[in-house]
Image (tube, rainbow, N blue to C red):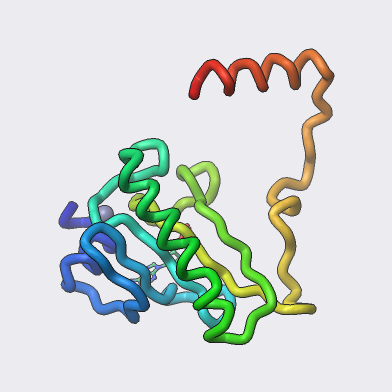
Length: 140
Ligand code: AMP
Ligand code: ZN
């Protein structure tokens, strides 16, 4: 996709601070980091969302996230990381090319856990929870 900035990084048309590359995956430092070492992991092929990613590409991306997370933590001496995908515009995804964030976290960094994503949690009944669980199970 010629108008996708991450495809342009893959093609070498936009520079990046690459930290890992193989045939199908690229990882580079986020240009506007949330913390030192904030790293993005992308499939080289253009897919907008995790939902669009073929299973083999998803495995390769997750395997790279798994390998890189300890290396990122060690590089910046971070005791923890938040690892996340903004999957779709409503979830805050700004670049429509799948990317996983590895965000180093530090004691007292002022950041919040993933539980702080929403301010109003839904109050779901047991029946509603049962229905949702069944629908997810059916959809896999
Ligand atoms: P998201 O909101 O999940 O789509 O995050 C997109 C991320 O891409 C943001 O954290 C940006 O700082 C980052 N970003 C955008 N353009 C570039 C670029 N040219 N090089 C590196 N990171 C970028
Ligand atoms: Zn792309």
